[in-house]
Image: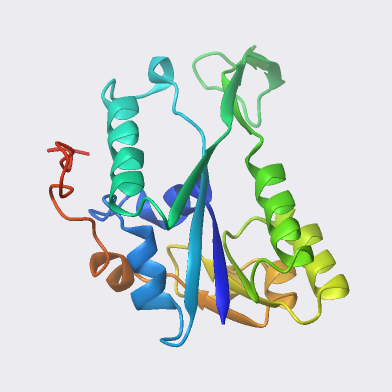
Length: 218
């Protein structure tokens, strides 16, 4: 079955990868060898993310590590991985406090920093719909647990009934109750991403034919 995988990078990272030692993740190997059936023809893995903002990172090396990782993916699988970058937009709204601050009980509102990821959801949804409607594949696999993808999956199921829909949920818990019920209901099959899958699908320490190596710390 000709298959294209669509990965929400931030959903994957914050859903399960962040607090593990498996950040040097080979996403093509992960799906080809660990998550899809052996007879699946994996045409491409499409990875959607946004450059982190160094000024707001706890570690100033974070942007460089992200660039190294994306370069590693592109170099190791130049024909099989496509990276699509949106952007993070910073804003500083004044918001009401959820509960009082003991040291400042008179304070009811505060200015906070918020980050909003732009383009990713729309890019994933439009690309999945395009792939299904144009017959670019026989199966789309979404790696996300974001209910915002419900509309795209619903349109594929309604208008492209021959296209199978797979869902891989990047959640830290094995409890299936944490899977987005809207996405689950629209999928032909569902898998929860496991730590062992990620452990067995790591990029080589040094990417062959390049000077790109795994960051010493992450």
